[in-house]
Image (cartoon, rainbow, N blue to C red):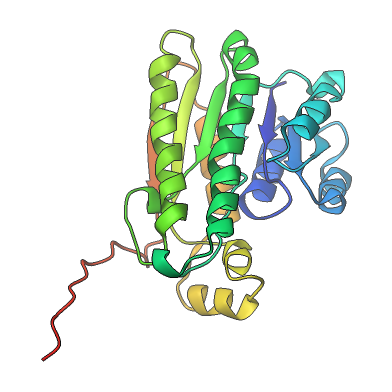
Length: 250
């Protein structure tokens, strides 16, 4: 039986991944800060399938202790799903909050590479897989995307770099790049506004966390000789933004 570690398993895509992998017969280590949500997942999926791992993804000392304390049955990781991440703020760069920028970089970039480095020796030994959650924002800029888009572009490029460095090891690396997915993402981004989230997704028939989770499970379950380098997904209702043109006032 294989084991997957999913970061940010307390909501959205990460929570859906925990369910999808557990229901497919994997052991799941789910990380997050909200212990009550992780415990609810364990109650739902069973202690033999799901192991909570409580820490803030930015706290390396707490992370290492939590990983070191994993029960033996969950200690050997075959697949790492780097899902934890967030966007904060929608303002243009010149009006943005620098502290929010730093939180996005610390979470989406620094924490992701640190955990990946921590687990790489094990993943190489076990010829495992790494699935990194990037975004269409890595490829298509939009107003207010600034640092968030930059962090996701890093994730995409880091994934490709890992593929190069891990050549010959048997480790597979994939960058998953979703468009609109209705989760708590926009509520967090807007400081807790459910109204803003409803306005963004209303009538758009967006993707769901379950849609992305099933895609990630498919990638992780492919034959070991096959690698998906990057995979971009959008709902049918979403397409590419147009160019912007500023005109002189008459």
